[in-house]
Amino acid sequence: MSTWRRRVIVIALAAAGIDSVMVGAGMGPNLVVVSALVALAAVAVWLAFDLAAEVEPAVRPDTSPAARRAVGVDWSVSTMVLQLQTGNERFEDESAHQLYHGLVSLIDDQLLAEHRVDRATDHELAWAIMGAELTRFVSARQPPRGFTAPRTLAHIVTLIEGV
View 1 (cartoon, rainbow, N blue to C red):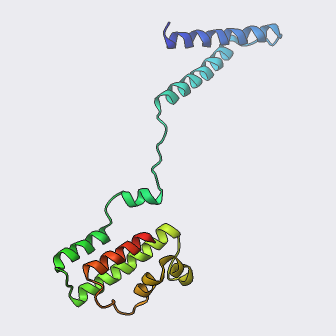
View 2 (view 1 turned 180 degrees about the vertical axis):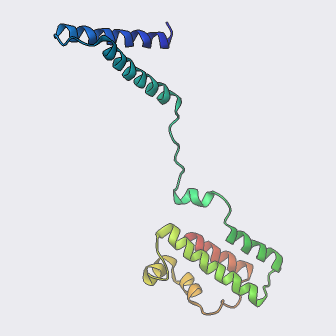
View 3 (view 1 turned 90 degrees about the horizontal axis):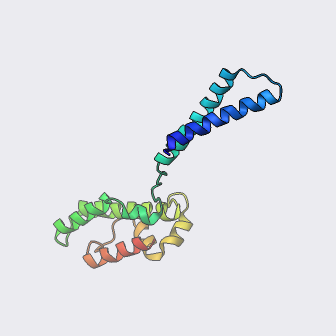
């Protein structure tokens, strides 16, 4: 027997059962009204079951820090890599300043994303998290001399990743 036929039979039996209980209790039911109400309620339940069977559970995206790092491209890092590749180991003063400020911004973003610490408002905690080398790097008024050398940059990026 098909599902819809079984459901129709259950609806009819429920309506007949309710009508007979009401007659037995001396309530004198209005057969048409009670049957219509039972059928309406049953159809609502029927619809709810069918919709529940068709709907797939929502899949929530992973918002963990590791997933955020893995998704998409970090354009600030890509821009720095491009500057490194086109600069041939030496940057003009303006490029060095841009790279320095980009790295400092990257450090601030890393502190916020990983530790929810704003370096501008909580210096001591930020310094404790960054360590002495990054703190000196960030605190410099001018970009440190020679920081654009590939080894130095690689070391700075490694320190930033460790934040």
